[in-house]
Amino acid sequence: MKEGSVVAEKALSLTLARFDELLKVYYKEATAGNRESLQSVLSIMDRQIKILGLEAPKKSESTVTYQTLSDQELIQQAGMWGISIPMDQLTVQPESLNDGNFPNHPDLLQ
Image 1: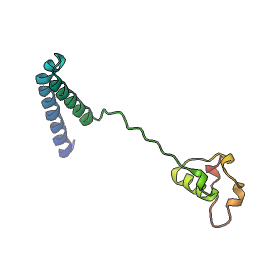
Image 2 (image 1 turned 60 degrees about the vertical axis):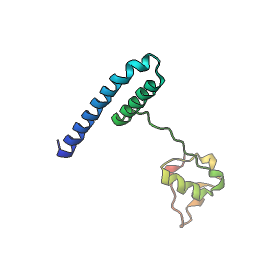
Image 3 (image 1 turned 30 degrees about the vertical axis):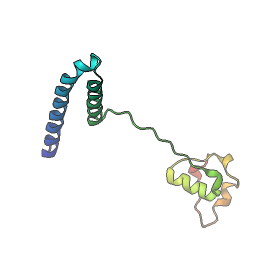
Image 4 (image 1 turned 180 degrees about the vertical axis):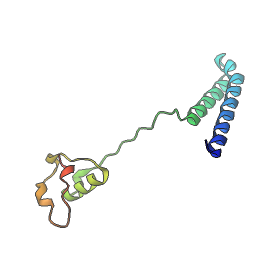
């Protein structure tokens, strides 16, 4: 194990041990209904989850509005993102797109 990894591992262990000690202080009061203690417990637990990398991945969506793109632009964008295009989304035949200025991408067309 590299020296930096050993230091990071020790720092993580120390931090987690400190969180555990803090939880011992606030947990009993939190379960008895103390709102401030409850907030402290939730905050500590949130930090533990983040440090351990246990957070659920954040969902993200991407939308490409292809109605405003020409067929050539659509195929170019699809190529950049590595996605395929249903043939019924094109207004021209794929063969006509290969006019020498734009390479044909048969692997991107369904």
